[in-house]
Length: 385
Ligand SMILES: NC(=O)c1ccc[n+]([C@@H]2O[C@H](COP(=O)([O-])OP(=O)(O)OC[C@H]3O[C@@H](n4cnc5c(N)ncnc54)[C@H](O)[C@@H]3O)[C@@H](O)[C@H]2O)c1
Image 1 (cartoon, rainbow, N blue to C red):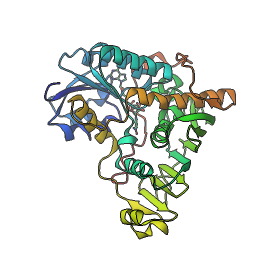
Image 2 (image 1 turned 30 degrees about the horizontal axis):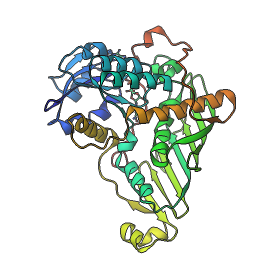
Image 3 (image 1 turned 90 degrees about the vertical axis):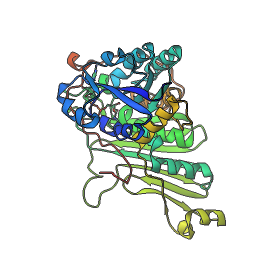
Image 4 (image 1 turned 90 degrees about the horizontal axis):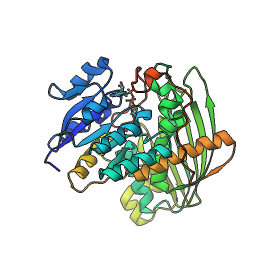
């Protein structure tokens, strides 16, 4: 690949700001050539982020037609992840897709198929896997100091209202509701930390004034290792804002010899029931009396993901942990959760892929997102809001 990888961003909405924390850091290895954004109302904000020399085009197909573009970073609504990936692969561009990969496993399979057929890479920006604090928890778990980890608890809190003018209001746009959209952060983290899920049971709640799909959900999972996991999402809470707040996201791992957690705004902590000399050397003597903070480096998830992606495209050593093939499994767990809600039963994996069945979405929103969403973007305790 040429010295500087030439990239186009497809979709210049809210999450572009997080990706633009990454691109300037790799400017010696990567050149942003174009941004495709259908809403001209975003032009000013995009210009501020990219400067005067980057082309802004109106539709993602226009960016795919630019011959020098070698790779695309897809930040489009979820209903466009599959068609844009397939179109990009056919145009010979490498693909990075912002989470969530697709609306169901059937779509993920089509994305994988198209990229493999075209001989281009498919990477998913599941940013938590690249976040310093989440990576620190991964290192603690992998070190084995917690013993046999038998219980996981992961949750996600936000206050999200999605009006009917937003693609994300609609099941067809978002791929269901908050579980597919954002509990997939927790599902993906769980799979990365603890291995594959064997079976899930799920309950969810809807409030049509907030969005068409579920705004809250509780998922109980049994892992192939035998461990249990409890995951929850609540998109109607301000628990993480203001004085004496709780948290935006939390992961807890509980093992036979110790436990560890990562909490937004605080960092990553470990506690061992009986710390041996090596553990004390590593974490300090307090590790057997209470939780000790373990520092995890500066980088936020999106910026590190972009750094690794660009390195991979240049053929340099890169720590890419989120291939399309891997992240398909995250969508599969979320889809299994929906099947559990629908049937009132525990669903065992793997599930049989089914084509997306439309329940209806305004035509004007099928290719273009009109309204702003107000998702929180977790950048770790370094800069979290
Ligand atoms: N990792 C995180 O914490 C996080 C947070 C927020 C959003 N996201 C993800 O980012 C992605 C985008 O979400 P968002 O919040 O930025 O949504 P958004 O609606 O703000 O941005 C999507 C943009 O795509 C544009 N668009 C739609 N159709 C287009 C087309 N045909 N051609 C060109 N542009 C088109 C829209 O005008 C819109 O500006 C989603 O996958 C979402 O899940 C991730």
